[in-house]
Image (cartoon, rainbow, N blue to C red; front, side, top):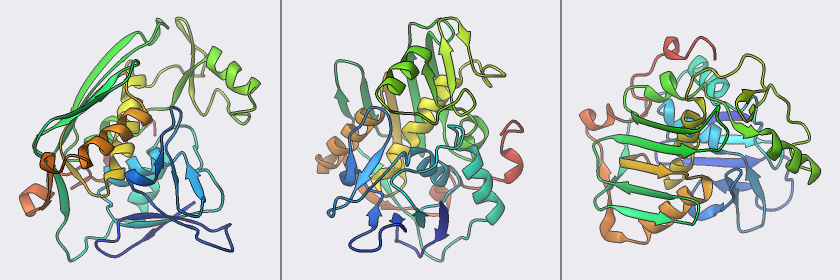
Length: 283
């Protein structure tokens, strides 16, 4: 995978470099997403797809990158060790260029909510982008967790980017039996079993699971196509619910507007002013 610069108002676009004939370009947009419980997958009109894009999308948003071309040579983004931190570190090492154009954001004006039998997600008005997330698992090592975060001024890099994908040992066994996650190890995800963390080193934060859910949600919200000014709340929400929420938001024209950010507003966006030393040492 390589992340390349793009001009103002270009947005984020994936390109499948292994596709030689036909359309290999995939805009990272909410209406190109296929709803999935395990990852975020986008597909173009030619049927070409790329999956597991949520971590790189979160890293871009968290570093203040709104325009990029991402080249990938297969149908899935590398999951690395289930974090966004390696991508954040690479972006910060390469540097982020400030473009000579204002940032247009999506300002949420009215609350919008979606729900399923498993959980719910809502978004409403707010200054900048803030988030609250609730999870609940029967495994004692996870249990109930809630976290709130204002994502301005590099909070994503400091608080969320080093939190890993997590799953239960029973889920791993079921997925492997179905021929999935065959390359998965205890090093590229946090695997839990009841009151035990099976992955070496244990949890990096006592609430690492809910932090990772917030990381995923930020990446999924990035499919709005522009920074969001609003407050997101998720209860047992995942990729499908967050995409359903974006679909509901854009189906309600009175619930949002496009807003050109002045300097003060741009300074409140995720990634504004972030510096490399803010990446957690463990990352």
